[in-house]
Length: 76
Image (cartoon, rainbow, N blue to C red):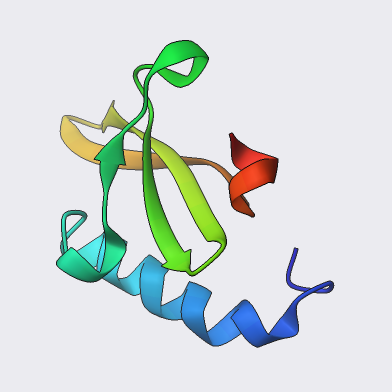
């Protein structure tokens, strides 16, 4: 993904940091997914770049598991 669109590298770094600090930060526009992706969540990295993830339990703590990163059409 970043090889094709290196301009997104900084946006992706920022989004991953925000996910770590506050998964519901307004900049991320985090939202639940429906249909075949029900149970997963998505957030915005840039205008047409999304991260799809799910909440999991890891060693007794809640964590997020990244499923995919790509354009709107690629991930949905």
